[in-house]
Structure formats: structure tokens, C-alpha cells
Image (cartoon, rainbow, N blue to C red; front, side, top):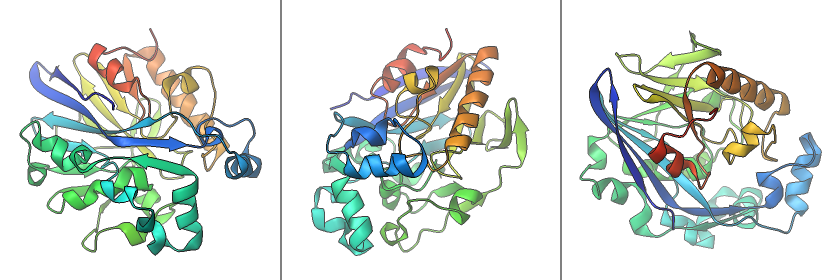
Length: 287
């Protein structure tokens, strides 16, 4: 439904590749996508909202880096097509995942199959980075038993909307302390020896939500998770209804916009249908 994109870039004149794959699609309540109120009122609006959005992508990003293959988020799986799949979560979580969301994915769209389409074995992936622990970002982790899986320690210790019963039994992520500073961001961690891949704390959607920054010769690519659902929300100061903290997400917006005002940033949220187009054209957040 959403076309994959691959681009060749350079880091210090060394070639790399970045790929975007949508592991199926999701529909959410329109008030989940964009809020008209804050806090508890926004949550109630989502529950009582009867309208769904159009189909949205579920992007997974892959970096073929000189230090190894990095995958950002794991996407959804075809298991979600069975309404019985979520019953193990109990009544309320089952209701949330079957009533507030609609999924559409086939087996060939899962991330392992998409990696194989570019001749990468899931077992060859060095690092899987999870921006946060919501179902549409974590279900594909079952395909990466040999990868090092990274999660912001705060996201693990203070989760919001996570679903541990859907984790594989072997899942024990490496918890990362974001105790370094980078530009406008007070909490970050360099993940590569070359200091060109960073995990950055971008809270609001969840308290521990993080994004991944890739520094290339062509600009900084920010794999933004669920900071927002489409770039215009950031540009025009509009917010999703699903954020856990209005104050935190507002501050995250400010930091990103200040960063993008001083350097080229390509901004790629996980459910933005135009994200792959911006990756392909290296279209900056701030012209």
C-alpha cells in the first residue's frame, strides 16, 4: 500500500544506505490523530469518537551503516489480523487494540520479509532500536532474536500503553541511559563509534519516547517515532490526542524546531504517508 524507499547517502564521504519499509497499515480514531482538547478530555474524545482516519503507514527504518545494520522500530505483524490475538491482554487492552485501531498487514509486509527483499537477513542486523513500546512499534521484534535491542531506560521503567504479554519470552532489551547532550537536546546517547547515530529523548507521546538521529553529509535525518503523526502537526503547532503529556510534547516540538532552524533536518514520523517521499528527496523540515 505504501511504497518502500531506499536512498544512498554518505557520512564523511563513506557510502551508506537508508531504507523505509511500511509493515502494513493502521487506522486510528481521528481524535487520536489530532486533538481538540488536552489531558483527560482528549482521552475521552478518543474513546467516544466514531470516525477513523484513512490508512496510515507503519514505517520501519533501516540504516546500512559502516559499523553494522541498524533497524529503527519493528513494526506490526500479520498476527494483528486475528481479533483473538489481543485477548491475552485482558478485557480492557483487548478492547483498546480492537476498537480504537484497525490493522491491515500480510505476512510479506513484515519486516523480516522486507529485509530479505534487499538481501539482508534479520540475523545480520546488529542493533534494533525501539522508539517506544507501543504495539505498532514492537510486534516485529520476534524476528530479531540475535540483535542487540535498545530501549531508553525511562521508557522501560515508566511505560505507558506497553504490552509485555506480547513480548517474546527471550526479550531482554539493553536499557540505554540518555546522559549526553547534543545541540538543543539535553538527553541523548551516541550509539556509534563515529558519533553519527544518536538516541535522543523526545518525550510527550510517552514519558520515555525517543527518536533516532542520523548525521549524514546530506543533512540530519530524524527518525521521529510518534512525536507527531504527520510533519505539519510540528510545523503548525498541532498535537495528537494520544500524548501522555501536553507539556512534554510542546517542549519536544520546541527543541526540534530550534535544532532545525540552525541545520538541515529531514523529519520522518512513523505514520506520516509522506515520510518516504521526504527521505527520497531529502526535503528539510525548515526550507
